[in-house]
Image (cartoon, rainbow, N blue to C red):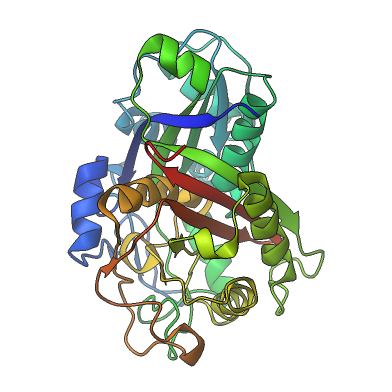
Length: 375
């Protein structure tokens, strides 16, 4: 199987633009959650979110365009590179404008418009598509991109995850009573819901032969990946975590690793009662050793379809620094998480890190990252 290397990344969230800025803010335990300014929240359960301040102003086209422009560091993308974008609701702000009788841009509304916009921004001419798999979208896109390279179907794949906070999204999660009225507390005994965030990240994947020909540094490898569905409920995860267990099992098998080889986990960790419980059950069944894990969503908010790309970038930096960031918002850990999740940074030792994400519809996705130079 052809090795799949990560050669370039970047990210933007409510706590900063650029990987180093994001990493330092996470390590310091900072949070980008603040009162929402772009629409009134008095009718909703929550009033805060991880909004990027630069996106609050109305955009002449769509805030999605401004978010794409923030990923300005994408450069030297090889000719023929495949493009996979990941977004749950694309330019959803344009649908809101339609409903309000305002001028809109219908060419920003649908999922494939995201891929078209990114391709136009970068001048990419190769195959492109958008992956919309709820909040596992970017992780599914990474798995799909890695599969293409491993199978010899592509030499390079650019995966770009991005999602916006809009009133449509906010009201939807509020109506499901999924938002916390107070704060996001992943894996805490008092957790009572998630808080939304927005952001974007890209991960440029490349085959080892092309990487060597172009003299590119390897930031790490996608060593394994897996995707599964619970077939359980339209929004709630299966309580037993069997879908996530299957996805992680696929990733471990593809990477030819045992559970003991995993140094740490970047968990989905939304702070919702049932999602966190499902993950804890799955981790307990998968890992006999007490592998440390964390969630970034108390700091960035839940960035929906972009989560997997953002968390993969953070995972690569975690392996580089042999440390995982604190879980912001954590007070008293669930008993099943005790000793493995912390409100402080945790040192790790090893070359492999697991990233997991789960979404509405019972979709689960997992990727295993290998430290640069480890594969």
